[in-house]
Length: 337
Image (cartoon, rainbow, N blue to C red; front, side, top):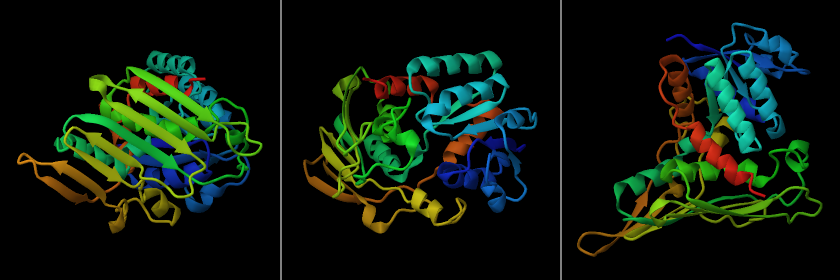
């Protein structure tokens, strides 16, 4: 196994929590360089990492094979474009771009330079949605009629992060959190036939949406209802599925982020394990018309699975499950005015 020499374009929360621990632990990668214009915080955690003060210096390093674009949303398009133009593979955080036209341009550029453009949708590997996928696959719910996905927070005050709160490309809760849930729905049911989007602005002084509702209609009359909000104090179940034979209800949960913030390494035996109180409730009718209720424990969360796929895509030319065609559909939805 030849590790992929990888660089991060930022070492803030995302770089420190969601990327560096996996790049340092996964044998398929070498955390080689970080762009740090001011404080060299990455070097404090990873003394052997190279620290570059400018993007130009980082891009000029021919040793770098993969660049993680984990910068503010409004910078994604231009930075990913520059990385591809210097013939680097790109792992681009969501939302990939603010418009479908921008993403189409990146797709064409990646193809022209024969490099991979891969989108970081780590919550496909969350324990809760993985459990839901297995329940759907089991057939116990029958034909799926509707699925409700929620990402609730209670943050009524304006954030200090300007790129999230100002009217910039890719700002607002639909781009920020909604893209996760839309991607999960598409990963299960494919390309939606129709979509409806409603956004709202409820915080005093807000310049961007802090509430959004999306209705996706898929083949076979499957409905996905997606809600993201910064105004829910008593959080609702994150996953509710109803089918012709039963229902599945589960809290929104995945311990991986909490564990990473607490300093747990991704290769710790307990990493990704859910709390016992977070089981899902499955209620269905069996072949004898008996009503059965089961508690369904979450699967083990596995953000590292995304990095395994990135390695396999770049080194072994295997397909990446987060297809760019699916991401393009997602961007069309979140960019709806």
